Amino acid sequence: MIAVVGAGPRAAEWALATLEGGGLPVRRDLPDGLYFATNPGRDGHYLFPEELAGIVALVSPTGLDRTDPAFLERVLLVADPAPGDGWLVTVHDVLADVSMRGLPFWSVSVVEPVLEGLGPWLGQGAFPMAPSPLPTTVERLDPVPAAIHAALATRGDLDDELTEALVARADAARK
Image (cartoon, rainbow, N blue to C red):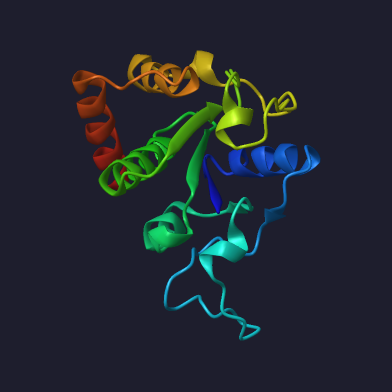
């Protein structure tokens, strides 16, 4: 399963619609992830990892954290930076989860999408992503969130200083 997690409420839906339009199979019924309380599902059917191979699924940050790693082929974080630091909490939580579990990870921004290489990473060859209909908000960000967004959008690394700033901002936003 390719888990799509949105940092911003509209981000993941944009990515799912685009991937689905490109012919990838998409599921929107797994936002809580797959673990003992959600598998088997309401219909009583037990899902196995091989049944979800290559399937793109909308998963919440909490659902990603709960999902058994046997189901997770890749994680795609879609950032939609917005005023306030709520989206940074999601970015922090997803980055912490994928780094601790060693999951294959890709990030993309709905504002400034750098998509070269995403198709092959998804196992699909060249894959065009539709332009985002979401409004551009990067220019309204203060320098720290703007730098975090730039690193995510360009698949750059968050250096130690930027990582510490992300942790501090996410912790402050949780309070």
